[in-house]
Image 1: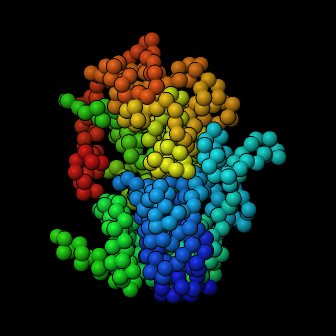
Image 2 (image 1 turned 60 degrees about the vertical axis):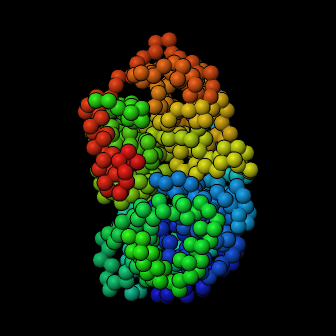
Image 3 (image 1 turned 30 degrees about the vertical axis):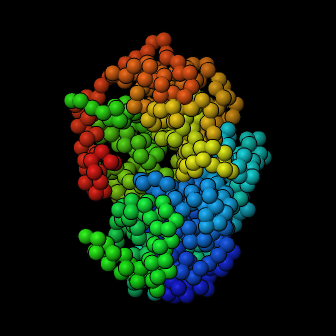
Length: 286
Length: 259
């Protein structure tokens, strides 16, 4: 059974230094608030897994929480580079970071394999690509039936996965909809799973075949309205494209980034306080 | 109507998508061209985005690969793993439509790194869905602006394979799809030459000279014997493209042309 906890308590209990952590959400439902809380609690030496690192991992990497990054596409969607990721890879700031690079199909399959309790995923991929040359974990396997040589990659089995969803009920059953990315697979691949939600309701009223994660498969459910911002929550709020654009100059400079993290994340008690501070800044700028 | 070279590129790319084709669409220029095709010559083109929407019909261009409107206008939305496993690897994609940071003469793509991988001069976003799209789609179209930095003699990194080392090397790699059949740029259209599979210029856009194309290509580019001239964008094509960009700019709060 998932415990209904504050996000602070959930991160304290379930995310440890040195853990392999997957904060998933493919453009939609990115668990930003949980990323902030990990920074606030100054977790260290994390292996961060995520198909699209996005701003959430740019922040965690810049804040020094990551030792290793497992990913498949590292840009600021529609804007450009993730400057903190690039600074860590190109100039080792704030410290060196190991990168383990895959393709989307590979990581998506690796989550499926993780959720399936399998040690590796098999897919038709990488023939002729240079990625296996720089990622020794990409290997091949020969089909015992046809002889076809296919790519084999280790499954993703995080210590803890964090996702954001629209709704939970009071028992901690979770409903999500819209673009689902690899959230269900990431949740089921992990030893522990934290879900932040927009609201907690008496009855999910989930349609048959909807994507529901049962409470007994989760560790904690945390009420964090707006917790995916600047990503979006389908049916609740839209993607804040302007924030993605505004992030570019903040992340470009180490000083601007550090000041931003100190003010908005380390300088706030929780995500509600972060939202209030951000809103007052936006208001003052108008 | 007068038009820009960027508009010519998008229109020329859109014309390559036949009506009814099932198209796996990358974000940015491919998405713009694919949606223009859907709004003009190919209303029944099926657009699939890697985030999960199948049959997306957005009224404005998505800023990200997973914008909500893609889901709302889709025939169905499936998990990302399913997109790659059932729909792409399963062999159901007619055309993979890709952008690139760099290409070489065989249509191989680099979106990973400029310089040495372990000490990069420029770290690019990485593979995303492109390697398997390039491998498994029945055909691949590539769209990017032509410049010597983008059209290079040798790629620093092969992220996604086109025709490999040329000739039958793609076949020998065992890739199921036919590989890239066109590179559409702001100057011209290139297609693989029979046999060598080296991309040669097969159609020049109006007003473009051979010298311009040579100067914008990092390898000794060749021109097909039966070199064609691309038809200028029609008023219908241009109006549809400009309306789409204006709607997009308004929806995303951008300046016109920024989309």
